[in-house]
Image (tube, rainbow, N blue to C red):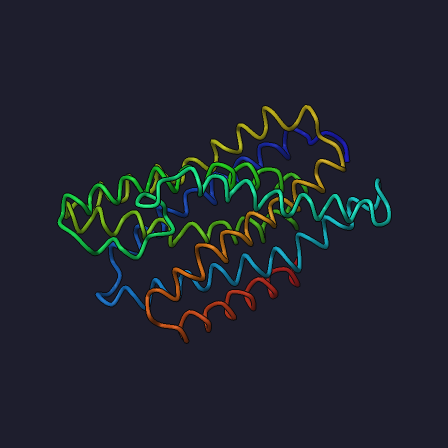
Length: 265
């Protein structure tokens, strides 16, 4: 693969911005949703997990293996892809470890406890913590988008869907604490801006070293990030809202949607 063209870079940046701004979509959905938000959140988290798991195992990993076979054939290439996959998991796990437990977005289900002051602080800290999580996601989305629209669109859809419940998680406590929809939307949007920021960092530091091998390994790392987020954050979060069958049904629905999306391209 040659160094990406300026047009490809601009398209990748635009797609990453689109994925990041879906936190604002989640915020708007939550601010005007019906009172029973637990079913909505369980379904949204389960749906997002289904999307990300399907894309990771049935699209990204096969693509990574196919690409690396062109430059490193046989078991050696497969080993590199496997290490990159678990390396992506290790990076996002390290970020989790660095974020204090009480401010970690994996503790989303506690936001309706406590007074308004605590709710506001929870929302703002969630925005910052989710922003930290979104930074490597933005870099991963940008890198994947450089591989072409047929690869970019399923990934952008997956990341965007994943960001919607994150936007909900930020907006709900801030809105319930302040009664201010604009403030809730602002903080949700700020957390999403970490995605294009991560893309810019990826452009500045990765493109000078671009090669088919780097491309393949980064795609595998993207899959690792997605799988870790799904099993560590999204699926437990969906279950904790207490609507098991809604969550599982939406996991399957998410997989079906992404299967259809991939077959169409």
